[in-house]
Image 1 (tube, rainbow, N blue to C red):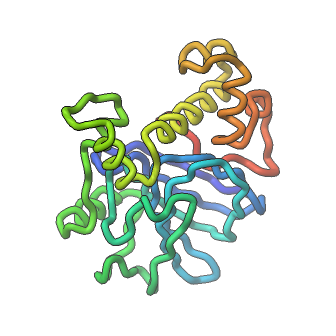
Image 2 (cartoon, one colour):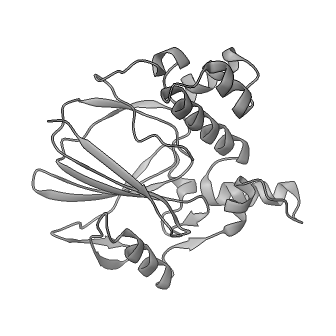
Length: 234
């Protein structure tokens, strides 16, 4: 039996997606695709619980698949920040949280009960009430194309402080992820190029190779020996 992965959107303005995986490991590695957002990930292996902050990924890379039978993650919206562990310091990195024992773990000097797939929103709301999770709404608005009265330099500084990425990089990552999903759904390369604003197929191919770790043609084929990490339209 392989890993069974499910995910859902969230109505919380702090959360983009909630996901969980159950089952048994059948592959040793996967291609971790680029992602501009960060995750708080919980998994159990060898009878021990582990908790990590997984930072934004600026490129695709081969990642080992942990020998875990249960894992669960909260994917946070752009602009959501843990001031003690800001995503800007975790780009292409992982910060393991200490003292995860039984059903509790330590975060920012406080002890928390482990959340679940079904109560992620309540857990995040508690973090917000305690001031441990904040949100710069300007970052979210900028990523969606909103205009402001701030200078471009100030906008860029705010965006980088919250995400560790430039606005351009975040947009390129999201575009590549959306392109990969469309191709996997069977859309033609020409349609994807026109819809998402790529110059030509060569431009599309370079973007997908860098951010997704697959060429457009490879995305048409299944690669069960090294699957992609969680991929959905942003």
